[in-house]
Image (cartoon, rainbow, N blue to C red):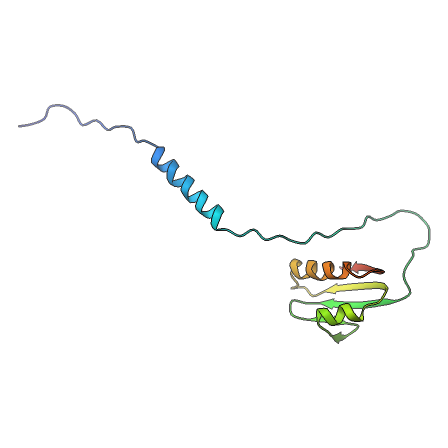
Length: 121
């Protein structure tokens, strides 16, 4: 016996798909980690014709992904903070230095009083 009625498709419900997408979104939001980055206070440039007030004591720091030198001598971060006195610190970056490494150094340098930090390009 042959069924004379044509086959009719029912419209597909989008509710299960939306539920699955919501569950995936919830899973990825809860399983991800949110890292906090240190904030750096940037000084604004000043205009004027007065003589710049440069400190007389300058120290040169070179920062790389796995090295830190003070005036050409290799040091650790703790030793660097112990050796720094009041004055100006010039920070030079290696081309492959990450921004997070620079932020970590600048946060530690900000804790020392009397330091003026200048990052060279």
